[in-house]
Length: 386
Image (tube, rainbow, N blue to C red; front, side, top):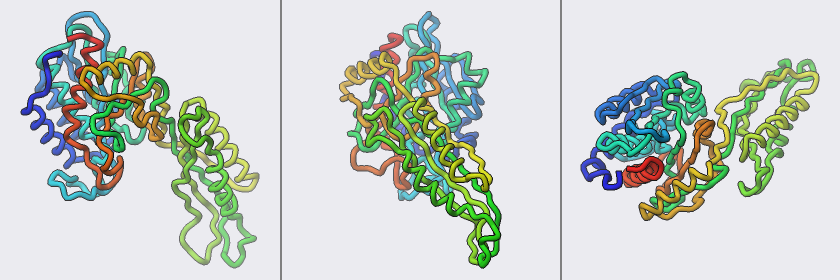
């Protein structure tokens, strides 16, 4: 693909396609129409195989050279966010309370551009899989794709993903060997006692003291000022509820939502054990206690070989590269694809002055469509030849 680059017509089409996706966001696990649109777009490029329904609504297209060689997987995400968009753009979300405010619409456009290039010319060796993954925002999608029996037919030797990132200069490539994004999980603690009349609180058992204690002690488990510390841990109280809003009732139940975050999976295991111990101590012998977990993301660590491939690709394109904002505190379920494959998660700067990811006024910069596609193409060329 040395001589191949997206044409001006390609960029125009992909920009319009991205904006169409932006108007019609679907949340994690609901990406039915997005998946249908993607499958139709991929089919038009003539892949050797299309798989649908991977891990839910995942879609993958295989482009095979017909020659022996490694398999390279390139991944993007299908899902939007449950956030109301604040925008005057003509392509703003048409669905109240849902919007593409993380740039997944732009990531899809990058891979749709790769589909055009691969449809025109296969790599010299091996094969390329373009994976449009569902449910990244909840941390469920990658795990479900990897465990789907259909994934065995496209299991890769190399896996790469690009995520746009505000705060980095436009087009700057962020890549590191080692930890790239944190492990995280949402911990829900439920405390159950006994309600009572507010005038006779001693006749009941309120979880208020335990809840107050946990709100302080959980955050006290945080450790390390920054991600340079391998022992880094961050516990964030996200929500607390004590009984129901009333003046005549001493509450008998409470809930606490906290997010646990660490640089490595091993550190997460220790953090979970410490948090559960605090909850058990606070509940004591009197309160009922239940704990469950949501939005579970493993740590994502880049392979040194894959990171070097990305650096060479950036150099070939004349793009500056470095660690950028990696490792980053936000979590990314792409780490699931590291089992049995050489993996790199990449940041691509989208500018230093715009809104950050998940902000209601965020929008993906269309200038990154061609840059992201070119970076993917250079990575494929490095691994498989052209």
